[in-house]
Image (cartoon, rainbow, N blue to C red; front, side):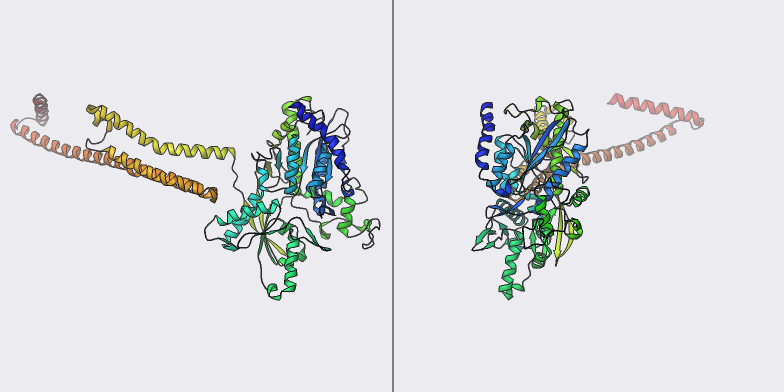
Length: 636
């Protein structure tokens, strides 16, 4: 097995050389950061794969400004970590960032470049991709070489399946939660009729499936207008015009064209309920087209440190990033070197990136920062558990590769999934067993005529090992508490029948009390309840955990009620009633005894000499009374 993996690693270099010849010129650039370090410091290289340029006809198109923010966020965090000497003792973090242009073919080619060691340094972990369909293919390739992949923007639910993507984790919430949030929004406002629209890629298909399942399963009074409308993906060229409806912008542009052709359609009002892109990526012009939009986005967190860093960047002093000049031109709509005659020359001395001229931090920037911190914390855990707290010792190296600069992927993945830290935004971060973040909160926003308002927040239910363990114990303990009395009563009756002489003393109930009748009634009632429970419980599997939990609760409550009503209450009633009857009989007997005693005392006084002193009379009465008691005991 070791030889097979070794051959795979050696094969990468030769395969990469053959494929790299086909690379487009736009993706030849690579952003490499090798931090200054001492001779004794180890270098841990993080690979990064991002769609820095948009997809255009299967190739690289215009630069994506939001992705450049991710690039700078990763660089910003790594520099902060390296500046803390005591945090990763004897280790410095570096990175290699490649552009995938959002296409699978280019992404796989760039992944092979990442796996090829440069200057004796190999990549131990990869951050990326931002597009789910591309991430799936990259994850499959990296898994062959046991290289972990952490994404901060790929949200398709299928990536949570650890049987298929065992080396994948992400710092962004799965679409399954976003779909559930959108369905809860629609159900909250009691909207019972919707038209479902989705893009034709994995992201859109999985998202709309999750929404429809959650939407229709709340109640039967829900209706989706036919099948969901699927828009082809990727964009297709029609003649000389690029028609791209798979994005939010493309869909709204198509709506506007229909309004311009059809005046009756222009008067119709729509309420759009969509994913995060509907409230984070639209410009004001398209908000005017949409008119009414409700969206659920991951909760915005404080990124003040990065915001300040990014707004200080300037084209005159930031030349490390090979794509920053292109970003600057697109941001200010100018040309730095005059190569584009349609744009004015950039006046860089008077230009600054700021919120006042259009800078808005992308919603996934905090997730990209968390991805770097998760890797750093994992490396620190490995240091402390394997290398005595300093450097990266030989015990961290993989025995299945000749690349001695990389950390064993399985060891690294294990520690990544165990991290638990407080992020820069003061939020607790950790992964669940599927590699998804445990803290998932969505902000619900409403945009009306270009004005954005926050409606509220949506929080996922957070199952954990502790809560799941408590639930399993509670269910088992509850059923044991319900059925154990039935078993105990049955055993006691069996013992009573075998010991007829002591039956009354053992049962502490009247001899004519038929407990077997009540045990039979309880047993038959429980059988009826659980015969009905089994099809109900498994019939609600498709309705979600809420219905299953409700059926389980009802089954438990009914079982406890039957046992209390048919077994415990009758016996308690008989015991209490018998006790009261005995007390009443004792009271009557006591009154009768007191009456007899008073009559005896009067008789004694008559027989006694009336001239005796009172004390003598009392003494005589006492003696006579003792004699009477002695006679009574003798008669008995």
